[in-house]
Length: 549
Image (cartoon, rainbow, N blue to C red):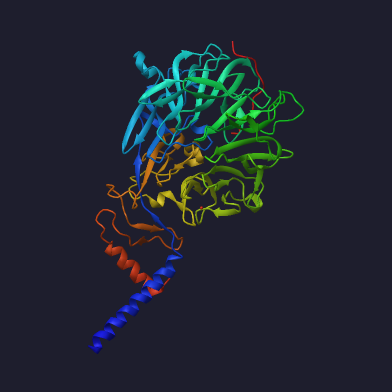
């Protein structure tokens, strides 16, 4: 009996020591779930896209929701009817079709001409999906634009109830419109072109937050569409306004010229060869107050990137002199606030969740040698880079505080940051890559962003096997986390990965299907722990020109 008591006591002591040792080690572990990668593919053409704007889209876009629905568009094998005039193609001179992906099924959302019997000549694209699954985007209607020949007219559209709805254009006239975002009430914000001449028309969005000419020199107006009626939101005093997003309360953000062309105030957004474009300020709009000038941090250029459901707005603004750009937070009660930098020159606030936590980046660290991601929760925190690399920049933060963006050397690879870090290359978490790389040489595959919903599901764009350039043959992908919220996923590896730079090992976790412990992983981990105890365009305005003949 005495020997048995000694044995039990010794066993209990060993188990206690092991438990304390493992608990201590967990403070140094950075466990991540594996992900199952799904290549969404195309409609027969070479390339997939995340949101309208393609390789030039740079604003944070909600291309997915918490129902596991994701939207984008992809090339068909059909050549664009304007392929002989490449500058007028919808995107890359293939006909594109919008899609929704959900539960392993990709659905072709169709085009405006489908009911007329010749859909192959028209393209469509998505821009935003609401929490309840409404999708906003842009589609060609097959009719040439008389003001911008041979361009084919594009119209803002809404996909709802398995139908595509043409939202039309503004009463002021014009032939072009496009959607920027939609909420669960079916309110759509977007842009529309009028017939009024404007030498410095916004018309579309280039890299970061700089406007440029695209559809010709005609005024661009921001609209809100609801229940079949398109309402002009106005401007901040200048000729143009452009929307960026809308929240569930129907509040819209965007940017607008504040004065007329040629004013003494230079526009720090642009470096035109001739002329002086108007100054540009970010705006906030709601039905009670109308359009409110958010203002800038002293410069003549600013733009918002995202608005949360509390009405908080984040973006970037030039400081006085237009040589430096800083991230900002705006709240209606307190105004615009400079978030500062991580010691470098510039910063941009790119996304904010409903808890008010902000992520951003840019040329952020002291000496401007490296681009780092920051998190702001009342204080600015440097999230660094994937260990051993030199760059990171975020695109989205979800309600759980998970952040995705681009990182690695020269920001070529997708990254994930969660649970206090460090950053991890998403490629290291995928258990079924099959040659697919969450990589975009030059960043072009990530120009439309990378998105994570509150369930941890990730949507982005990368390079399939046999492709060398995301700008030529990139595909959209979905990453499904192999975790307790996604049990029984075929092909999922439910062990976990330690992202600590010193080692990449599997953690002992319960199998989400059978509940059985991964004994091999547990044995290896236990032995190791027992033995050693240790373990991140601008496209300048061209010279003003006259309307096309």
